[in-house]
Image (cartoon, rainbow, N blue to C red; front, side):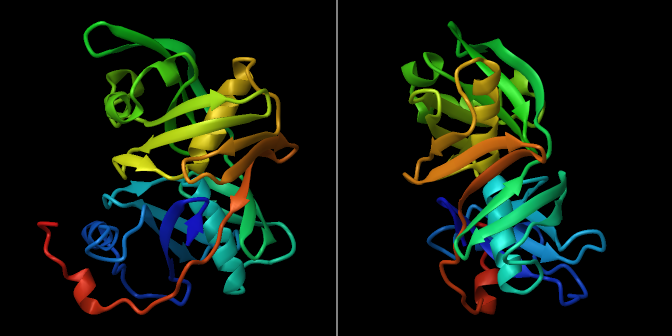
Length: 270
């Protein structure tokens, strides 16, 4: 499935699979582009006694992440297609970040409500390289994001600087995803995201879109709702209502296939 450019391998495990087949090394091999299926991550749909389903997300490096916004929207559409969740009314699902409200808005789009963003600091000074300094904000929207706005988000080289920010000690021992955000008026912005666990730029990032809009609102740069144009060229919408912060956009099935056993047994040297 593709969530505005984030692509995922979706797996239905609600039938009572006795053991976890998709461990970290297998997922890492499956997500390697050109040598296997290729994806930003794997989403497993599991039963949950207190919600329509539980979503378990693993990044392409084989590491488990607590939440993925675009993955959550894909999970909602996928679960509805399987009859595990309603296709015409709100429902709830669970991620490792908590309980989420969701609504399938069409066969190829969904809105989910995120867990409440946690702001660690706003516009804090960050030292980069030997002499360069900039202002960045750190917010957790299910996973941590370091967000930069102009002029810091436009004066540097994203592909050069984002990996340094991703592992900057100011963002903790595990680092953070990195978002370069450029507002276009008060109700839209352009966004580029470097995702940890993928260790590269992705075509979209839902938690990053919410993080950027949340920080932009708190900095007085944006008014809700906001249209976020991601690297794929598609639009995500972010807003807030009585149920909390929500994320809406494309979530569509691309193909279904039979996974051949040899593709799981590729060598670790990939």
